[in-house]
Image (tube, rainbow, N blue to C red):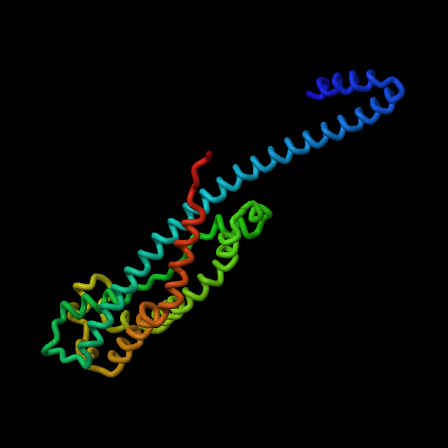
Length: 246
């Protein structure tokens, strides 16, 4: 293309002999500048195309990570809610009368109210992004802000789960292992060595209430944190959704 322009410029310079060399020199400079600008434009276009390809790959992995996190959160919520329902059932039977209570049902709910699960999302892709220059490849400002806040959102939500888990592991679990047959729920209260009178004690009531309150904090009292967590995950999934290439 530049040789073509050069021929036109030379002909125009030859038409005016006194200005021939001046035009020729100026034309050479213009052609060089135009050539540089075209080369820079092509280089910029190529770099942008490469960056867009990298961004699509990043968003694809990010999308997969948060789809997995949403699945895990749904599973954890299901288990915690089921445990809470069992805790509510046992609490409703207090104080226990071992002559009247259905021991099979009681054992079943005692077993399930001890299930402890915490939300531990995958952070491999997110952490890699946050700790490298590739984070700058994400062009969507809203998505960038969500990823920046993600760690704090997780910490806020996990607080009640971690407190409940620590209380169960450090306090309540030892009570169960001391007084019940700690294996299959069908044997919890059926082993002949189990002293069923423990069910009528204040110690047992406090054990049940302790677990009930921990689960209540997770399921009912942390709704604000849960809503924020769920909303953030859904928004990241939507914003990282793979787009069709035109």
